[in-house]
Image (cartoon, rainbow, N blue to C red; front, top):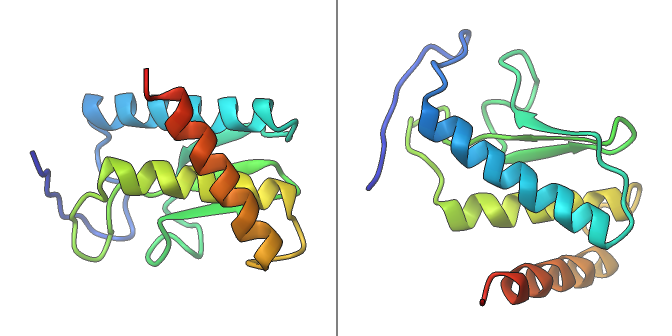
Length: 125
């Protein structure tokens, strides 16, 4: 089922129970991945309304703060990102914890593939 919301970009939308449950799951994924690969992660949360990337990014990793922000939906259209896309975004941001200064280099993409394989192996059961 697709959910759609619209809101003023200057205010935080009401966070539904479903949003909170989804974010709990994404936090679990990110923290398990970070722990498995010995990466430090302090927080995974919704994008703050005033964050400069809120209107354009699915996720951001503030690597030195060891914090990941995730957008559950596209704030311009109000359409929710798919769960699969959000899981991939969470793993993508975890990969930035390992390659803090490298950006999207080949090493980064290889590690992201390792994270994806690990996630799918964990969830095949």
